[in-house]
Image (cartoon, rainbow, N blue to C red; front, side, top):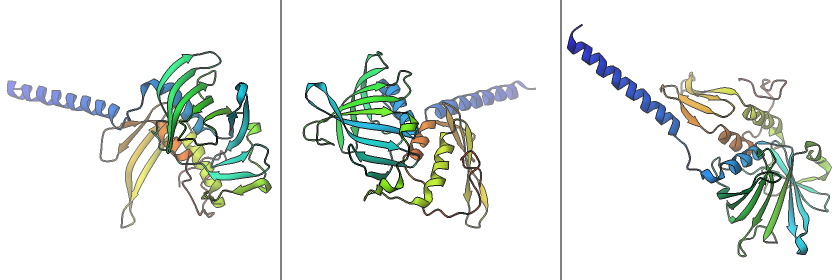
Length: 283
């Protein structure tokens, strides 16, 4: 082997190694949102809460002397929320509102103490509203336990400026209300035909380890690979068919988006696509 050829091989190997390093770094950083690092624990608990279903949120209003009185009860199921004002027998049925996966509900979090579960102060916001908040997580830090939001005088969401929400994960208390007591809210886009398929879709997205292959249908009817996704307990990656690079993304992001919006409507029975576990199988 000549010296010139040896040098050429060395240079080529170095370039390939550098290229692979750049690809790995790019895969690590691509599409990573600029999320407030001080709220990582609160954000994870918020995600876990909204990934769940068959839980309750009890909204309270304050009274003098530090007393609180329940104002609204909300039951969250796989595809709907059921809301009623305390003391009433009628439930309103809503589609669960869609949330942007990287919506920062809480920012500038400050840890207070860990008594009875992690306790934080933070800024709070959602479309149309903002305020200051106190957040308590469950003792294991995985879910929201209770929150207090204090609204500015000119931006109240409720008839009162301070709101306490308590989250209850006892599924026996979060059963779907009897149909006779349910009315569909006027702004609900309810479609009864979709409930089974959307519940299975939610169950699929809630699975901790799975893969998904997305295929593109060409104009001539042929089908070819397009995107591959791999999801594990805490990490997820995807790769376009023409690329050798796997890019990372938040495995919870899609789950929230899918959990909080119906993906299928006008459903009609065709081939059986739901297995005995209630999870979608390949079409």
